[in-house]
Length: 558
Image (cartoon, rainbow, N blue to C red; front, side, top):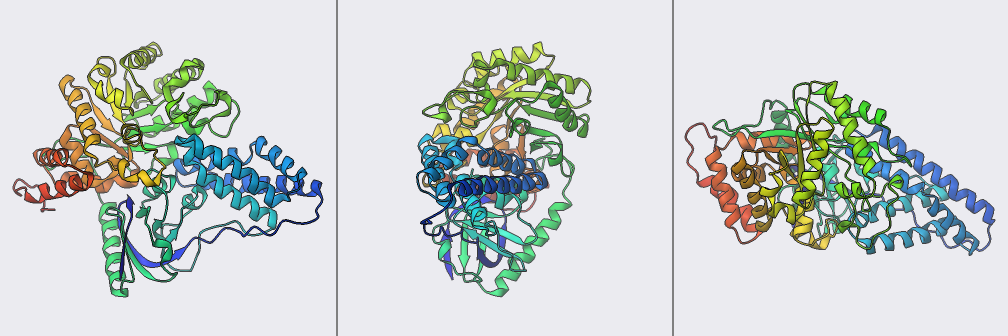
């Protein structure tokens, strides 16, 4: 047996034979003679074929997150500058496959240099290159293997088009050599409920068909296990899935302290199963794949669908989280040297205020026609003045409950001042980690700095929670860390009032909270805060839990 270690990206255990993602098409030698007109036509035909395939995948994706990512890829492949640059390359002596490869290599270098969100899209560009080259050569699109039985999928990295279409009955787990815990692969794996490990060195050395196990929480992969081990692990996994499927009810600690468990969604079709409410309604999906912003009427219709699905329940709408780091053509924002630190989120309103006011008016119109308890929050708020201006605008539009997201350290450090104006705070731990540790979310080499168990991040979370407790206002977490059943105990112990996550993650978090009293959660949070490192914090929390007395229906020790 051989033990490999990566970063746990989606919790759960899985076992089976491993099979790797099919390699991309090999680029043939440059054609010595060709018809430039025919090659340009081949590029356009390839663009149409790839765009149609990605659009079909987006339309049939099982969740809005996947659809959002795929539609962004459609926009990228249809970009006229890409086609024009390919024409220039063909005029310079390249055939269609080489022209596409050369042009996307230039875009790839630019994305890497830009950092932030654009750097996240490098793997998307690689996927588009491979699909376009395959289309030019008349080869099948690169894709996920189908050996005819369940297996563990291994790859250098996975493109959104591959991850979004995974059959969960066939692909039991994912292991990638690259990527990070906030990559599209990791986020979509959590959304689909597939255990995943990323940044696992050595995984590509494991031969196809070898039996392996993976632990999506610890990041441990063991290759060369026995068939008995595979049977045992998968039997336990199925039993756990069935048990959690029966889990229902609101989030509560063992002694009845409420911790609302809410869903992260992108549209009404993400509302699968019974949920207490929505803690993060991402509205970006409405704005993608278009050159003009959605109209007031379009937005009202989309919001009304979600509000009508949850009468009487809380729905937290995040206003448009876009900008230079998530380019939308109609915003017409200038290029920036460091988009992750530029005009994004609420800052877009500085240059195009109508985008925000139109959205607030549409939310208000949809809310007035529904029974849902609609809350609104702005992303990338940095100062109390910004919080005050946003909440005032919400109230002017007839939206009584307005809050802000805590994603930058400046906002976390001034949480009390934020709450002088905002009705609630919602912490986005992905971006807060990125900005706290000056570590790009997609830089795999720095993935350890993005671990939510980093004591410095926990200290910022504690500060925000304490500010909310002091004035009696709610403070929630809507970052990916909320889906970790162990970390949820820390968050509850800090005083966080709600946790928002992919709907599939809710049962495990519900059961984790139900097995511990609020006082136990506080002791676990103190242990994590006092730890000198993420590993020590992660180890200290369960250790503190195991040392707690049972009594009072707290459940079995962990």
